[in-house]
Length: 241
Image 1 (cartoon, helix red, strand yellow):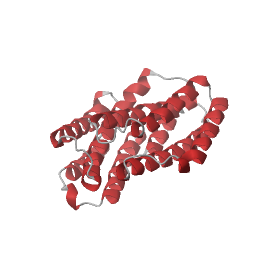
Image 2 (cartoon, one colour; image 1 turned 60 degrees about the vertical axis):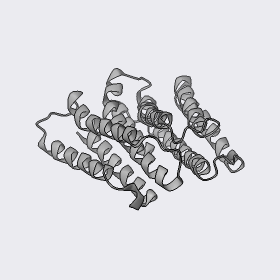
Image 3 (cartoon, helix red, strand yellow; image 1 turned 90 degrees about the vertical axis):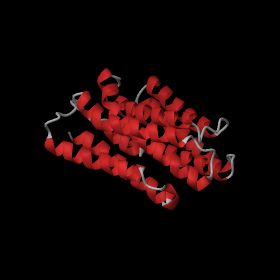
Image 4 (spheres, one colour; image 1 turned 135 degrees about the vertical axis):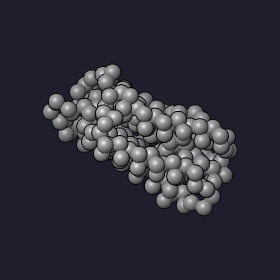
């Protein structure tokens, strides 16, 4: 899913500017490696309750190499932000073990929705604008739904300490409202754009349908892929209009 956000950030940053293709490709593979590392950390914490670090040493070295490459391709500000992303992703799982808490959801939304998208745009223009922060608001709303619903699935599968169901439900509802309202509120698209309206209602409707499904009867992996696909469609919809 972060890869979808890279596409959005790259598209946003390259509007009216030459595409920094080399930077975008290196950042893509950097995030691909980070996604693998995070998945490894998630599975370790969820199943074992601790992280077995030895298998990650080679991948951590590759991440450092990518950071050096990104420094030469971009600048020190970008590299510091990317390094903070790496550190924060690790700290979520060890030593703090935030999985299963509200802080985990907040941090994931912040890292994926803001940091990744900003970095993808920044690598194109070497500039962070207020317009970008505004454009990110619908994306952040969608991530709030995704992580709240994913948390429900993980509670069922791994038996983690459960966040209050009402809290997760309220987070999903808040995210859905943001997904539906922000594209119009920030002036990204006109309310009279019928095609956008129909597609938006369809995507939000599918999220709502999933929200009310009984998570005990769902396959966790397939359900997360389904949520990720819906979110990708939402991001592509925003990118096209």
